[in-house]
Structure formats: structure tokens, C-alpha cells
Length: 201
Image (cartoon, rainbow, N blue to C red; front, side, top):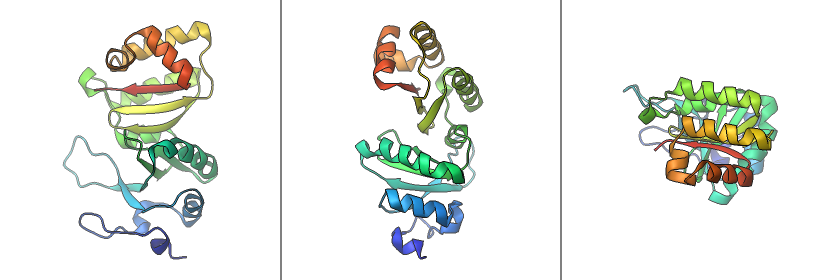
């Protein structure tokens, strides 16, 4: 099947994007096609600390903001068995990416998610989220170099919620100081959204 025509492949800044470079199988592309129409583009691994040329790590597609999360959740279910990870990859929620993999924390590794202004590196972010995930399982649905968003599958109970909110604040002060304004405000946001959201300015 000519996926290049179906997805309206274009050119990147310098060279034509070849599907083989993305690591996305025909089976995965069929699933993606059933759920979303759009121009397929290369998705590049973040390269924050070196001058190495960017590496293609998957594909990305533009979406409407209000459709980003529902599309990602649907793709998660349909791509899980063949080991692909869909996620929102930009803070404006107008683009999603799909990469090969089965470990959701690979999204953060690929995006090099960090809190560098608080001396929190990528390994520390991944380690902390794995710790929280063991206590309160969640699904990572989005992330970039300075933020991560996840939906709780097991939401903290009332007694635990204040404790985890304090932990979140200590690890990511900006989420309160430039967001909810207080621990209680963060707790209310978490109750409303059922989300774990971290963002470092």
C-alpha cells in the first residue's frame, strides 16, 4: 500500500522524509489512518545538550486542541499490543507523536523532560515519576522538554492526596507558584482533572 500518498508526505527542511526512517510499521499506520487524517511528518528526538544532528524517532501529526487527548487515548488502546506509544508532544496540544516502544517512560527519555532550572535532570524526572506510578498508577499522555501530563488510573485517596500534592510541589514548584497558587488549589485541580501535571518554567 502506498502510505506516502495516503498521508500526503511532504519534505522536511532539507530532505524528503522516508517512511522507513520512522520505525512505524504498516500495521501501525493502518491503525493511525483509521483514527486520524492529516499530513504525516517526521518526529525528531530532542537534542538539548549536544550539537549532534537530529534523529528521526517516529512520526507526528497536527490535530485540533480539543481532539488531542481523545485521539491519543484511542491510539493507546489500539497500538498497545504492537508496542507503539502515542502522546501529545507540544504544549499547545496541536500535535501528537507516535514512536515505537512499550515503556511509557521512554516518552520522557526521548523528550529529555527536565527541570533544569531546579537542577532536576531527565533521570531524576523519570525516577520520581516511576516512584509515583508504583503508588498511584497513571498513563503518560503527553510530554516535552519542560512538562509532562498523565492521567491517573488509581487516584490518590483523600488522606494520600494532600501528601502527594506536597511531593509534587516540592519536586515541581512552578506548578503551584505559577499555577494553582497553593497546595489546596493544586489538590482541587487534581480532583477535577484526575491528572498528574508537571511543568517547569
